[in-house]
Image (cartoon, rainbow, N blue to C red; front, side):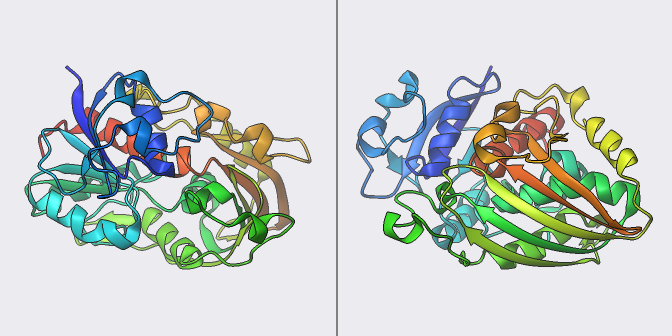
Length: 344
């Protein structure tokens, strides 16, 4: 039997991706869609300003929107709520016994909450065993952070990391709908995205940290970030410079990227065959050409250059609303279902 799932914030940009990814999922069945009070009671097709390049799935078109703090009859909840409202609502739902997978930033850095990218820090899922509530909460990181840590993981495993400097070029879909006004972003680049730089400087250190008896011991390297909004619809570009602990061997790193398949034995529906790919062309990756690799779940790495014996640089690309948001949360739910079901 499929597990019954609810989507909070179902009408928004990330909520629509949840609907798309879960509508025909082999593990999960959507039983309710929740959104703000202005949408409650409306049919989903009426409430959602649908903007994905596909039709609204038939099975949810006529579902009536319910409130985000309702009593749900479900196994799992997916939260696409904005961070400014997600925190207390998610806390109440978890205290009431729900198992919740959140895309919001509200609880990402909580000591007993996994900040999970399964290919990178699967062992951190054990933090749910320390949560005292009757429900459980698992979060996924910021959209650009996910692309960064997936690219950094093979580097860290091979050479260690001492310092990271990163500049992002982030797509307008990351701002949600209606997002950035057209007169602000057309023919322009905006060198500021609220709270993004803080997230990119802190979240990677938790994700790439070590799980101990006292929780996650943060990684010791520093991250410096500058985040920019650019006139691209989907796909966040990341330009990174990394100083390493050991001498860099690019051929060894490329082989490690090619062989980076840590979830292959779990056979998860949303997991791509290659979660990270190296693209050798000098002008790759590009959002329009490469954001949909692996169904939008693959992170592309290119422009890999050895700067010195212990430093390198690269460019990475992540589809921000799929791998960088809803897709990662769905993957987190899949691995949770395989490892735990509801038994924690």
